[in-house]
Image (cartoon, rainbow, N blue to C red):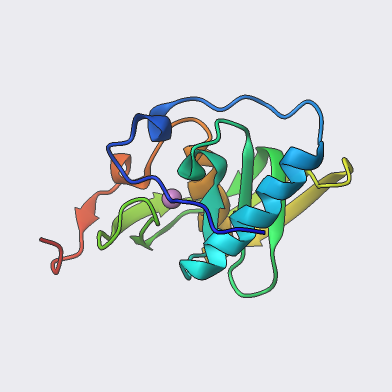
Length: 152
Ligand code: NI
């Protein structure tokens, strides 16, 4: 277990498309453990693999209910709409309004290789969308409609 360096906006790794995970080996398990450590160390709610420099379709999310590990996640359904402030560990100090679906269902594989499905509303839906965007090189600043005033 280790804390990895979080890449910041401007690092081109954040703009690349991630590859699907074919085999869940020891390196992937270590990556998942390290991503959780890194997320908690930074007091975040979600972290995607490219944020630690790894171009694989992996993300972790914890909105306070325990860690959710997502390997090869896909959003399979969306419902409603919400607009709220959002931030990102790769864009420290910047927050802005982003519109997201209010409810999403995500299908992914867990560390045992088992298919799993998660349905999240509100913040959890937002976190799923934000992290899955990272896997396509999309950062929340691409979707901000209005920044909070206390930004520089
Ligand atoms: Ni982010």
